[in-house]
Length: 281
Image (cartoon, rainbow, N blue to C red; front, side, top):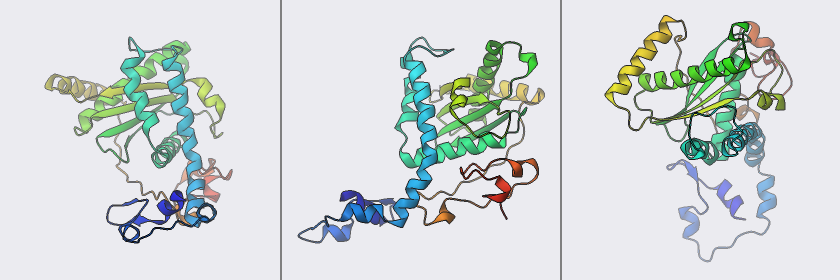
């Protein structure tokens, strides 16, 4: 019954839901309707929230995959002596709530499908609840010049580390960055279990003890990446999300996409091309 009360009581000033509003607390005695669960499951806002949360399970799978291999010692590569060193990063992935996971999964998948085959791309995404924390997404295509898969993964890990340091240098307020690197998609096929079989790289950078020397080295890395054409100009964009969307408008955001992007499958999961779904104008 408490779930129903929670979903129905939203504190506009505090910006979150509460089990008992101030008005309800003043009522004595307090009586809870036994039919509350049925009312909850039929609540339009709750129904739309459950639909919107479907994408968040991708973040669950990503977290489980990293956790399993790191904690069981089956990761292909690790730059730490023990799992305790990377545990804070895994804990960060696992501690996010359902709404935060929805936002993070949506951000990663949007980035993943936006990077075209054979292209490299990065995206810095700030934690929706803790602005001093950020996530760095990196997609790197496999090319023949990499030679072996082992060499490719080494190059990708080095790039991930470098981009994390550069983004700290460009955004001094960042204290922690969770880095996730994957192989650039080869076609417009949607992500399935084969994505996890390819293997992704995970890193956790703690910048709380960042010093002047660290800044100097980061500046050098930043300049090297620019010289090698590895750092392009990026625009800052804001994402407006509603935990409890009111109808389909809250689930699908109208976006203007031109060129080849319009023929990709829409990330909302409808099975339609972008130009006939969320990208329809």
